[in-house]
Image 1: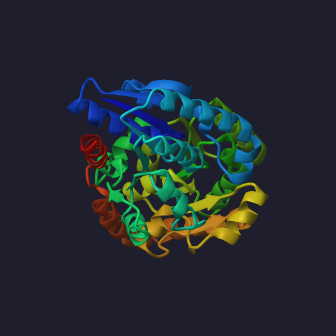
Image 2: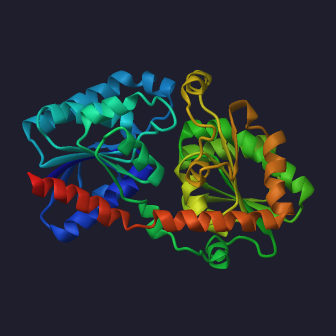
Image 3: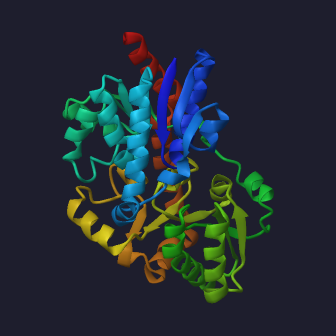
Length: 378
């Protein structure tokens, strides 16, 4: 059994690695190749290209590397056409994977897309392209599956592997001890993102927000996970410029431990918001992108809220501040609401527990079963 697979960023690496592990437990000789991250490679996937080559966010940012990405996609498509796998699965990265899947499906190679593009939120017309490109969609969230059913696209809701991995109740004291955080302090986690572009846009805002909170609540201590040296340099530069005396601990990676240790979280919109939800943490969400990307997105969005917690809840349950609204003047009082009124956090915990239960379905096993059934059907 040979499966082609492409993941484009860290969250996709987690999902793909779990899928590979599950299939190889059932079929130890199964082979995987494509574009892989470190977790996929650890599970035995052959990486023809490194996943970092695809890790780019935003419409304008993608355009800047269009020729490079198109070249990689065409080379990979030709490789799989010349050496057809039993099945191809694209994990997230829809702008890259859907075009690749369409080429492969046209050559008779079964295709699956794992992680729905946000067609329910914007550019809903893409559902036609998706139907032309894939034989099946695997969705992480139940509201996505309903959308595809309404548009007659084959779909399986598998849940989210993070919901399986993260316990219903985390040990706050143990997380703080593991990170050597000071005792007797309330902890605020600051997560400005995993990409250089995200940290560049949010570092100053998050640091100045932390200063504002500290002025009101002097017993606070802050902690920030930074995924690599590049993002750490940016954040440390902003710290030195705007708040050199801020009581803060910087951590290499370990974002989940950082959130588990926190009383409240300020974070960039993205997969980290789902982790914060699964850890039952009150949160405030912020995001900034290139102004052209924001201009186009505002005209295409079909939903009021963009963050996963709000979409999963079906209503606004956490505050989200985008673009010009992502300012210390707005973020500071939003964080202080949780710190000064703990009962608001308690209400969120019950909402997040219900969502966690809905998503805990054994995602790796469900996704593996869906792929194996397709291969068996051939």
